[in-house]
Image 1: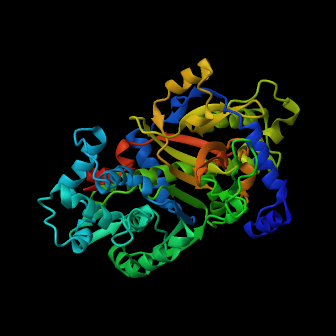
Image 2: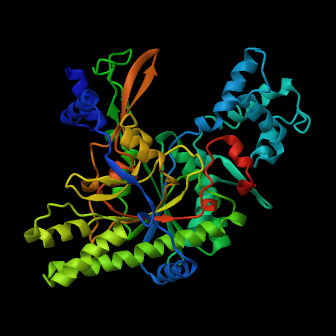
Length: 504
């Protein structure tokens, strides 16, 4: 199947032939669906905290002295954020008749009507200063859109979201990247006034992120009395996956080389695994608000962190007891109840009683994640479920709709009962009870990837994604789902989302 030229390409890619062969086998076989048994609900997978409990966990976190870092996936381009504007450009450039009453064009019209309300307006105005942007005519629209999205203008269509101007302040404007600096200072600062952040970025924009940081960090350090420790990494080429044609044969480019594609955010598990900290905050680059609206976000970040601190202490104490064989029958039962009540783990019915200590040890000695969950108000994406594990036990999992067999009436019925949404608001404990880092690659489920249909050069192809970072890549973590208020979830999926009051 592979020629000498291919083997040389594998070497440059940093991937082994056996791994490529496994990927091709995945295309042929497909990935199995996740077997869900219930949607996570309050009392059954979702934890609701009253005000007293919230204050307790804030105190737990604020008294904690461990190391922490904020991990922000920031490599994706913002192209989809401007999808409607690109469609408008095409119509305008081709002099097509535009139905401004259609839903799509109404969004574009709203963009122009409220153009001065965008934080990037002042930057844009310097490029189109010959146009009265407060009294726009249809003839001006294409000029403005090219100035916003094109490489001769602000180039927003090619930049990642982290480098886009999101919010306006009295003393200027801030990018999404800068808002993460602000947030980290408010909830991620350690006893020595340092705050650590790690951004995963694409190679072509790496230098732009470093340049932005160099230009602004002194301002934020002074503003928030903080010292930043910042680092960047790129998605490893070795995590790219081979594309195939519709017959599951390797897809070749026009020059005969094999086509490898980035394997989705699950590939970032390698980057996460390289971090050295006791606690990791994970949050998407576009889920930020201006400082004037950030109080609830900060509060709930501390609450989730406090839950992790307290439950991890209990796990470590149980593991020390297990290691020292200090377990009575009552203590064994206490741990079983802890796993059930805290991590929502249901034991398999055929559990070997003689191996109970080893089983409890294995179930406890894992990375821990505390995940904020919001009520689902129609957002596309994953949600919290209870799923069956390979050993017959049940545990909480975050699943995308593609992982669920909607043709199965029972599975589809469970999916439809889901009332919560995953906003990617995670607190992660990545050390064991001996203070050693877990090898996170050992706690993923390789059978939870995705296959999607794409095209290149007019030819259809099939692409493969690795298990999602907070889906299959964390399949064997111990998980706690906590309900958080919707105000803490303010993603910018389309450019007009920046017009919402939370971003103004």
